[in-house]
Length: 394
Image (cartoon, rainbow, N blue to C red):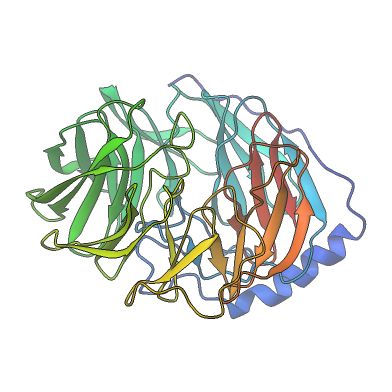
């Protein structure tokens, strides 16, 4: 890895009353417990805003988070301008860490949007953060000091790390043909081969779940279950789902709830038992879905949030009558669903919806198109936008 370089530049958008707003945020954040025992891989730093430790929030990719979010139309708090394509950040102790430009990782103070430091990387999009440090996937796995970006330890290899998950002080790293588990000191614990390059991982108490794709230009992928202790393969399923974007960024992960995997095929909303791989077709689709499901309170939301199904019955709730769909999978926090409007406007809107009816609660125009899913925290939302950077709303 190249040597890190410090920067201390402030990237702020005008926001009247920002100081008072931050005090209000800090005052309400103590009511939310972000270290729930049923939240695999969650962290609990001393920050006011809560943590977002890895892609899709936690080790089971839930996108249903224990944060307060925002209950009314927000205002821009700050803007951090970054070069190149910007990925969703991870968050720890009121600092956001973000990959952008395919070769840079930057640390940003959530209170004011100030850039704290940045490092050059080798181009991987995999990133995670915890008490041990900032984990960055490149040619092997590197753990950086969160305060200054200096490398604490590295595990070099000739393969790019494509996905990182954290669970019980262990690091799970997926690469081009394998998954390797490290302890907090970088020592290898377990490794096992995968049939194709790893797109994403999920980890729970007993299992590691892997999504692989042989060719990024085809729709077929493989879901596999492995024993977390031994790495032995338990089951395997070949699945076909149409991709929306060339990098499949809106559908490549999958939520796991109580050892049940939820994913979409071209035809069905599918539930897979994590222990034995038994499948249950929850419902048949009328049209091919383009996004992965988000499961919240026993309801699976899919196809840009326009469809909702009870995972136990397969039925659409009687109260469900959505006013719009979301460009990306919905994120749920404190009884509200958040997403990006699926319409033809440019730029798109950040929206909040009622999870029971789909009613639009508020919407806020973004400054660019091509956003990712929003990162929902306590009293603040961080939205990554390609070729712009991060925007924080409060």
